[in-house]
Length: 225
Image 1: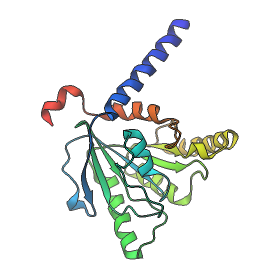
Image 2: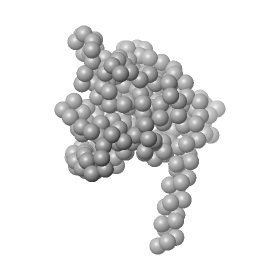
Image 3: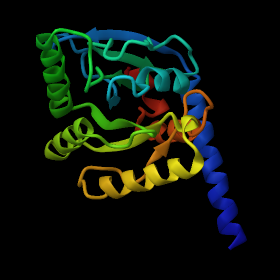
Image 4: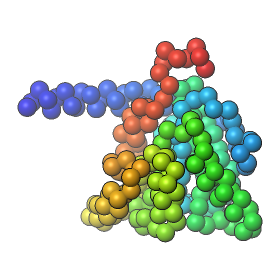
């Protein structure tokens, strides 16, 4: 039993180190798309971050990559109005989707980038998994459920990342996480594990890095990129 526990701990440590090395690599902005024709070519595996406006997508990307200003953060909800693509170490593409649920923009603009997001989610062949960010202070809302249903319908694998865990008391955080886990268990395309994170304190960041590293292009394929 002790041997098995030790092996599990050793494997976790190895996975965390793989994730750390991946996200310590070069990460470059490559495209900002406001229509399907502007999407970059399909070359690398992609994972994307979706969520309500002001849920902390840009902050999470900055925390994962260890770069304070890679993804632009804003005090104004809904400011990101394009699909933002980053190339991570020539092995993985990260995509920051426009926030949904609120935006200080004309309704026609909101409709346009909402439709773009839906078309991207339903038809991008390189998309490996969607990471749906949920504010740990609020839990799943109606707009989140719409995206969950869309991902189920289009058979896109998705996982929930709880954000801003440092803003919650431990008891409340546990309650919200349990409620969220129960809800996603009813969705066929959902990954069963929750990732609980804080971009400010660093909670859960190394674990999420380790998980994301599973989707990247193997090192031996560098020459092909």
